Image (cartoon, rainbow, N blue to C red; front, side):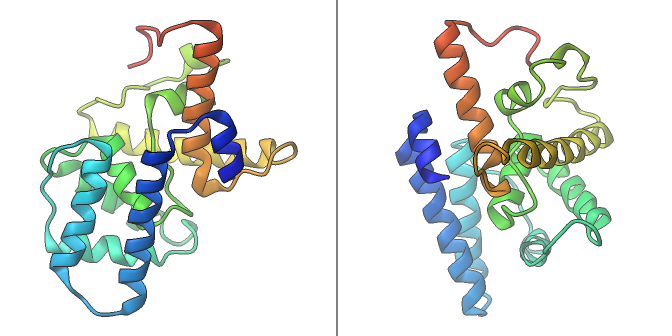
Length: 196
């Protein structure tokens, strides 16, 4: 996958910083000691990596994020994941793209980062019909439904594309984002007003 992303022109410094943060978080989890100061530092690195601003996160949120980091699938954890997403969306400074980024860094096997470009690339043929696609919506239930639909659509996309290319689910958001950038660069198009 790294070679595919580099071939597509993915921004390596940003990619490498994200990978370092993931590695630091995995090291934190394997050490087994709870140091909330270190965990807060890692969480704020994730936020700064995505937004370059701070957000409000509680110790209880951190506890649930650490629990979610150990989930192997959403089969038995979808309701818990939806509750966690709802909690994150209720925090000051966190909208769906940031919430998905936090979830992704804690468990990239289950949670892709949602981004308007990745969504557009995923649904470019039927984008106009992609109902309720508004990442800035204030309706929490709509956002939760949208994100879990996005997760399912990403899984389907990975299953279909892996007949041609080997893409790990943990990298699907980066792949879609970069494909969108490359397609628009080649076509000399800009992101339309319909993409919110």
